[in-house]
Length: 125
Image (cartoon, rainbow, N blue to C red; front, side, top):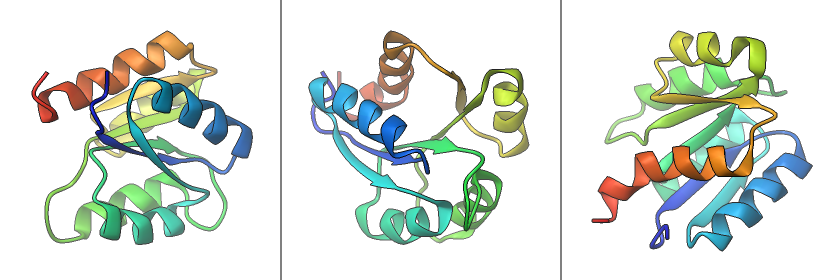
């Protein structure tokens, strides 16, 4: 169980965001969402998520711009998992120095495993 760790989903696809939200909430995580990087920056500064699941290709502010701006913010920063098309997920993650990546479409078990890997140490499991 997630024991209340806060996960931020940054994705302009509402169906993906809703699917991931339901899956993570079923595991005991708290979830906030943002439809683009600009909205995510505003929410992250107030909510201080434990982990960010970041789509790379979005309108307004994409994942690359978000990651750069987020890491310039003062204070501690949540790990980022880049979530993008299978053929470039690892490359995109490397470009933004993300702590992990998930290739879309991803399996729900793969998602939960990745989230647990980055949140368990924060909640004492």
